[in-house]
Amino acid sequence: MDRSVDTGHDRGKQAQQETHAGVQDVLEAAEQECLARYGTLISQPYPVSDHHPRASMAQRAAQFSPFAALSGYDEAIRRTAEEQQSRMERTGGRKDGAVDPAPPSI
Image (tube, rainbow, N blue to C red; front, side):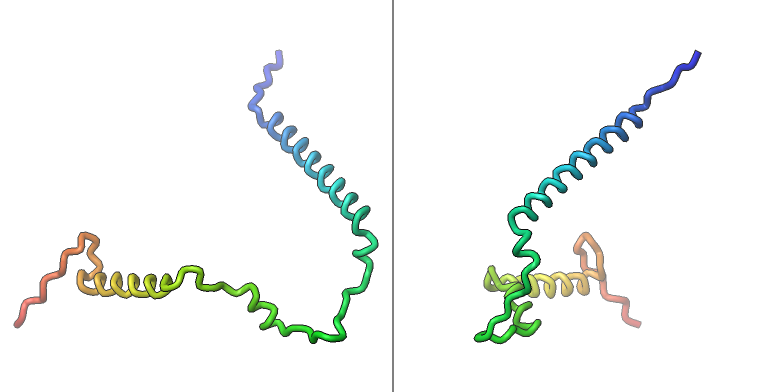
């Protein structure tokens, strides 16, 4: 008598394959819809302005560079880091914050 133990592995694998197939179907449908709507635009050449010169890579990147949304935040972080470094130097890296005693003088 064959008693196979169902570990759920086969069911999980089958469910994963069904999910993958469903995702593929959705992606293919979205691609077809995109081509139906914008297919003529995709094949068009990129427009080049006669009046405005193309921006340099640095100019184009600058529009995505970070900005100081919180004024003074960078300074507060720097100051906190310096205080922590100073505390670590004073305590010799001890987590309890106790200051190491001075070495005995000879």
